[in-house]
Length: 203
Image (cartoon, rainbow, N blue to C red):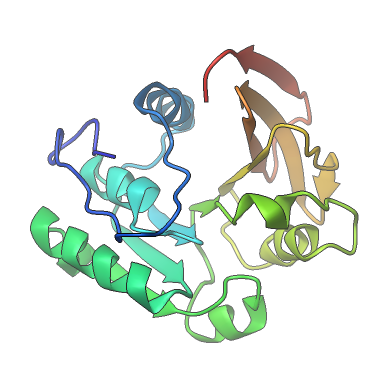
């Protein structure tokens, strides 16, 4: 894994030994941030990276000019690697780390998750298999709709076989991209719910 653009372009990210990971391929990450750029993201925006792992998405956002990123991760071993990646990047002053399970949104919000402009949700794939209205993932998305900025974007990474509903509170699905076995779903407030689905071979 590496940062692919911005002030830290080319920086390799450390990963915890022995941990299984689901790294996003460079071309998938590039596609993600190209789409975000059409909405003016993430430059000068407040970003939250939920289930952040070693910080691949949040660090990319910082490298591309995000004002700040709040990283939320529950695994202490992974958090230690995230802290090292932040130290090596020189972007620590624009980062905040919350050691918590991002599914516990009430706890996370008590620690200051309101008002964000961009939120990445990248839970373990097993947690994305159930997308029923009462699932932990869908309850998290619905709860976030009342916590983030009015023009915010939310990006959810799931298994390709998982399908999200069209609306969660004020959040509407506006785009979905499929890459191999994974999918990225984009949700926003105050935008027309015109869903486009794109499929790519790799992911």
